[in-house]
Image 1: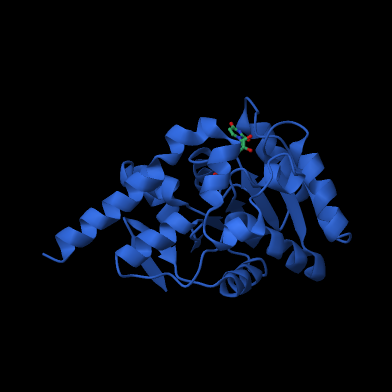
Image 2: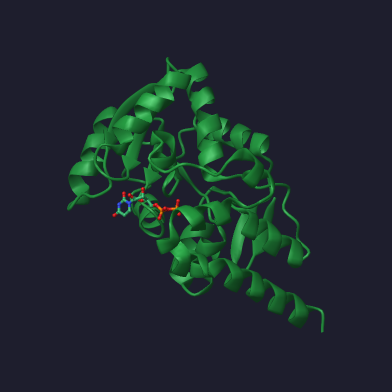
Length: 241
Ligand code: UDP
């Protein structure tokens, strides 16, 4: 079931529902892509109709972040739970390993995908990673060619928004991939080059604060979070008049 939050139509699912949806998709021959918008991305979509459409055209739209959940609550359309892209991807690795499905990693700076693959293999030794490419290419054609040469079941697209959403939508039919997931900086997370917040901060919905402390240069970008929350408050007040 879809729940519309400031124009973005989220799938109101739990982590395990999202995973079983993904498990079905990768058995299918119909190519699909998944997006994982946080409040910053929704705020971007509120001001860019084309980008909003790219998000809404995805087969699976997962709420990545406490801000989206808070906004949903303010709008009286509560979502079941946060399904962070990196957690969804980490859980999916176990499914891919068990089913013998193949994975390709695209994005981040040179060397990061290799490091991420190493870390993934530590936890999932039988996981089949069939290729990797960094996200700083000049020309897309050879990237597509290399992916199509190995026809992975799943492609992690970690190019940041909106580049990754544009990539997935533009090449959905051309790519010989069953399921693509836009995952922002997740490969940096898997590689360990960008640390995630401690569990207690994640539990208290304070992951944004940890990121802000670790990467103060994100401050301007992160102002989208209060702006998004403010916009939901205004919408609620207007709606209840
Ligand atoms: N990136 C990339 N190619 C580009 C621009 C960015 O591969 O042309 C990568 C970048 O190295 C980083 C990710 O995309 O790993 C974006 O991370 P960010 O933290 O902005 O995304 P978030 O997780 O906040 O969505």
